[in-house]
Length: 249
Length: 300
Image (tube, rainbow over all chains, first blue to last red; front, side, top):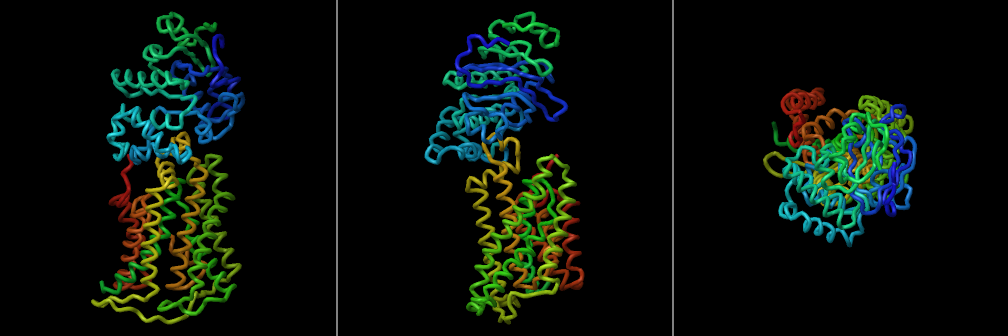
């Protein structure tokens, strides 16, 4: 794995082994350093362990061994709600909003971890970023369309001003137009200084917007390098098929 | 149905409804049917009785009521103690099953065991002899149309309304209420939304235990206090919670009132021995006709 040209790390993972059962690891010794402000795509075939890696970092899957640091803080083993307070936001792939709560309540729920004086200001900032949500704040979130749900999930994650934001397949189930809008939004968020990690199946769309990429296969990193050019790299298909032996820089 | 059966049904339904709120919250958030919940009702009544008996002051009837000023205070302390007992039971028993990811049926069977243990402990400490908060007689207030209610009954109905409104406001207007609803819908998402699920679980146990204690004190005032009082209410509690729709506080109280009215009707028309059968009939009818209950959402 190459960590060259990576500035001060926002997230550092070393030798991470994780999974749902102790004797059946899905993530099998991942090393990863994500620089502050980086926009990273995590790619790989189905079953490669992308979502499990993201969930392990977010505190939702047991870490069997390895180290995990957010900035300078050791976060391995911290419960998920503590990680949110530490500045790590995670947006799950499906069921990423509370359908029975209103849009306002979805945002308030996350804002409750902030000091009382900042909650209103952060919620209004979220509405300013996503005006569609602001116009419907009292309706149940379950009534939103797929794209609007993804916006709400993103807005909810942003409320706590995370230093690192991980999204698990935000394009799933969305039309190409909406995927473009969602990725544009993520680019804007990244430009504001948030480190964004995008777990994606939609390889071309992800590589078009991210600046760096990591390819996982069978729970291991098989490639780490710039996103530019990777989509047309003939080795990418080999990586997805698990036939690629080396690691491209 | 005579008008008096309506009053009797409303009062019994209030008790059942308060107990059913704990059942419905536990079921929706912890996702298992807690058969030990009835014991919180009995323990709440005995906690209040023990406090009243030990302190032995403030026993003179307060105004038109059959009890003195000490009982309401004892009821508040009993609610806190019963809430604490519920948290303790979770800490000692259910939390370890949750941590291991045990199947729901294991939690349910464990709750049966806890129910028996808690009831046996009550019998050991207080014996199975029925006891009373008060033996004062009360003059019923006439409302016309054949309706009569004692001041104690009127106070119970008013207390139930206040408690239900308070719980409803807690769930809809406060941070912990939002968190409870969020955990009920999606506990994993709640965790990544910054919700301390452990705190929510403790709150649910405390609320359930405290409300059960309130129901227990009411039952003790209306009827008598005995170790099986909670166990005997178990079927009506579940009938009310399922009728109202799992997770719905207004549904639980409305379900309790419907079950209470059905019981009162059964007592009046068929006989007192059919009281429990009325709750069972309501439960069966709901499960067949509308499994999601009055306020519940159908699940595919």
